[in-house]
Length: 113
Length: 114
Picture 1: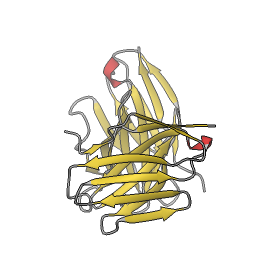
Picture 2 (picture 1 turned 90 degrees about the vertical axis):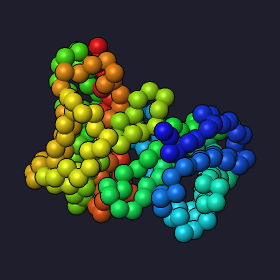
Picture 3 (picture 1 turned 120 degrees about the vertical axis):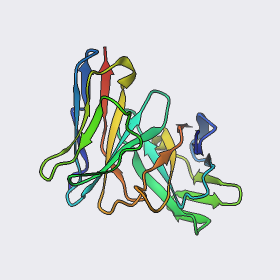
């Protein structure tokens, strides 16, 4: 039973354009959502997060949007750069208990020069 | 401030052998999480430990897997009698607070069982 879903295994965009990565979740107990970036043979690197009490968080070229009613979040990267090419994981956690992270399967982003 | 350290980075074991994976958290972090990533999958939670205590092991297979985080030294994930299905990347994350939004990942150990 997958609680966090990333339905697009891959995405290809041109340098300078916008990249939009999507994530859906099923567990309404989640109260924090995170995006991680991962290069091959490396560990995930934290990118940006959003609390469930907000609907938008921005950090430089990265913006995360949360739509609680639709149980959907998205990561926007503007402008996209070739160095952004990586696998992006959406993850969620909820307060109480161990606060373990629940990950989606990832979306491989390729930014073409 | 060094990041989370994991060793070895690559480990090859024959079926039936034991695998020991080590994780040294960031300085000042007393919370350690272990995750496993199978090919083409996302990371899946295995176990959460604080110093000398297992807090949540709900993601650990019932047999052959164990974890510890002693008072001194790194956290150890131990897999006994490895099988081919154990081949995966194992990631450790440490946290200063135990909060889900404050987990910092190590580079992982890639285990190959032949």
